[in-house]
Image (cartoon, rainbow, N blue to C red; front, side, top):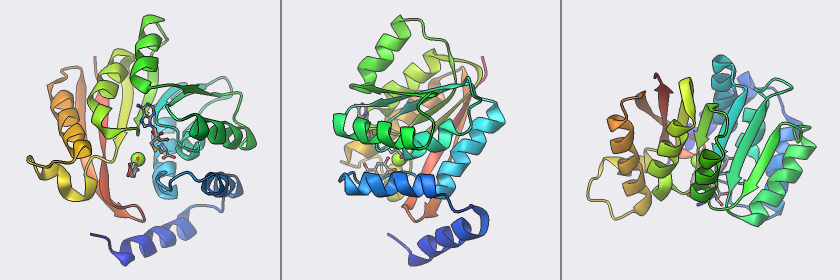
Length: 222
Ligand code: SAH
Ligand code: DHB
Ligand code: MG
């Protein structure tokens, strides 16, 4: 299911409310030229991430799933000059493109892209006793969502905000019998989030240029 009107309204919102942004447009262009899939968040979603991190006053941000660094740039813009964003990416080509885009955005001093399977990187960060994160954006392989969420909660403190992208999947999430591993990954995530006594959580459906999907929002309360 896709509605042309959803894309038209996203284009309208972009033109009405978001300033032209040559830096982010260049990041998308270079990602496209490098052959990366166009599965970055939409501009209005990227700005929502930036605003949520700003509302939180985030100084340390964790991202799981970098791609070409589009959401990374939005999130890093919320940081103060001494803030830090770690973004985890399994694909060396994606990481290379993202590092160049982040540098071109003038944010290389705040952003570190760590190459490797995120489950392993998260385990290592946990063992190293990494300082807790204030804001976490989970947007990688959906089968591992529950693992990423558990790791995020372990590296959180009261007040940490966790956002998970793509939790509606064209509505397929409501189908318990779905054979789609991404759908089952979201359903496992929901079970883990609901059972986690430290967090308060909800999810919201969205439509737009990315189709029909949604995001989950969790607040770590203890
Ligand atoms: N957050 C980006 C989009 C990320 S797309 C944006 O909105 O701009 C998902 C990314 O997760 C891809 O780059 C993919 O290579 C990466 N990925 C997939 N499996 C992964 C894993 N096991 N560990 C780390 N990254 C992974
Ligand atoms: C896909 C992944 C994403 O993170 C997204 O926002 C859209 C699509 C995908 O794997 O198809
Ligand atoms: Mg996504």
